[in-house]
Length: 342
Image (cartoon, rainbow, N blue to C red; front, side):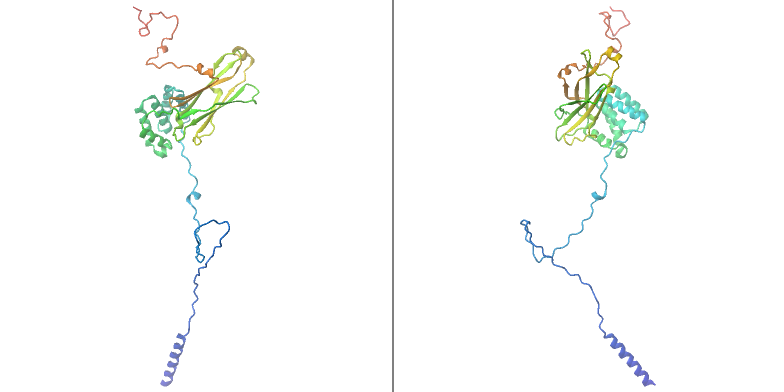
């Protein structure tokens, strides 16, 4: 029995030894580089020599750029005025400033400021008005308040206020850097009653010059001819509409055009009999940069002599109290109106 057990154990050891000697095959994938030969074409010019046995690697896949993924940046615009009344006062103040009526502009802006004390557009316009008046301390105070609002509160006015505080308030001489081109006049033939005239006023800028759009203004005086032959200045500005053809003005090509549409409404026979018929005669165009007059163009040319002359400014306007009547005594003293003359 013991011999039988030893025999069985020996056979088991022999079988395990034979199994360990079996060969195991492992399959493994090995990448192989392929040689690509580029044949020389007839239209290919002279270039660097290419090794015919060189291995040409595949270029990496192009990754999409952020410019193709992200939308284009949106330009900043000034925040709108919340109060409608303040917005109307602001618009009227800008018109008064361009016309040179600084007193009216300050009055309108103060009224808008009482309604919207934290509006950046009202504050910045107050700075522009006081800067043109020469009150630089008040102007810098308004600019500083706009600057403290930051980009989130003031938008692009933040950068303009920062530039005002950085550069100071020296008067920029733009003479010879902005000018008027030939004004083109078109009469609309499709108007059956009345008359419609379109004026295209090109404003040209010298190259490599930086200007502020808010400082550029164009004033137009329109003259009519009556049926009696009189040349009169237009007083009703509601007949005139104006706009820049491309807004906002970028001055990329060195020129921007202001279009004015002047419409003469039809008149009834009674009005025409009393005041005479009216027809378009000509215009006088003046280009301003701030308070500086840069160019004047009139057509017909004799209209330049018909421009209303402004009275010289004085410290006291006595005409508000005592008009120049012909019936006043020659020794009348306007400073002492209640005392008899000596």
